Length: 417
Ligand code: HEM
Ligand code: MYR
View: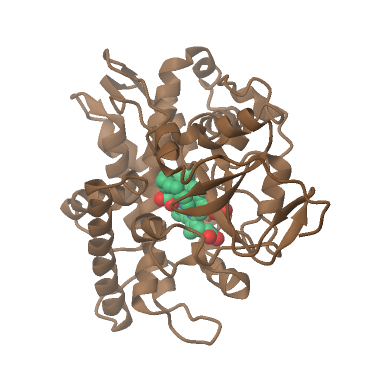
């Protein structure tokens, strides 16, 4: 280290994993305020970690020359949320090639199909519904059906109901410790077995699948050496579509909560103006907590703004905190969709699903799908049906990851307009 280095502010103590669990989404923001610094050092899961928050810091984090993803996600997250050997942990050419397998699915045709499926599934589920409905649970079910249809996985209705829980465990319990963590691991194992068996049958032509669907595309995808992927890796990557599509239910729940909490904003959506619907959805993704931070490792030692980043060090980028950074967002604690009229579409300041680039970076492959599903869902809830909110506890806690309203949002007296 040369002598011009400045020491980063540093959390005192041996390990801060328990504080992370306690402070949840505020862990990095709290320390940014305490140290008055967008960069600081802490210790998590027994190792030194550098935390970053903000736009310039996000631009640094997404520089592929400086950071790598190999071994960056904690093992317990790989064994639950991500799976092992998937796109999240790849670098360089190998990542680019695998990511292209995902991005090739995100065509205009597929996105417009997803929009239609979203409305179809909501209509099927709610148009003749006379009972009270739990928005979160219902979203998970319709999104499971949509995910299976989109990926080309053959299923019977009761199978969709069966798979909801396994697919949900992987994101609902990923950040937990104890029995919930083990349940998430078991669900992953079970789902991977299901997918592996299916891939084998697709490869042996025992099941007929549409060639444009992910199940077929991934099963016959070849790596940079021209080899088929190991069927376990195909299973992990198929689950990297199925699981997060079901996870959109978290945003659906917050979206319907926003309909309850901000009626003045709902008024602006009543003529299905596409721009207004988009801005509401973007504000839901900015305002409410979901994916707290993402991780990488320093590729080779380098200096930045006088701070030294040592090779191999774990680095966390605060996604929630950057979306709430007062230097980037005026009144970040206010739910105000019209702020997106002014937004300059930077890849580094609005990063609920990661930042940077899609193809050569790790930005979420499903961001467009997420936005489209939420826009159609919003239009359906505002313009196709009317409903009431019974008395319930809408509070959510910022130290639950993922956070969800206590009641998971109940609605009743649903009527088609
Ligand atoms: C990556 C969030 C939905 C597929 C990511 C990342 C985040 C994220 C934070 C990592 C970014 C990084 O490390 O730099 C979310 C959230 C979602 C969502 C909050 C809302 C439910 C989806 C959907 C799909 C998807 C619907 C697929 C249909 C992926 C894939 C990656 C990814 C494949 C890995 C990309 C890579 O490593 O290059 N997502 N995502 N996600 N997401 Fe999503
Ligand atoms: C997905 O299923 O990929 C999308 C949404 C998952 C959100 C789950 C939140 C838990 C994240 C824990 C921290 C991750 C650190 C790498």
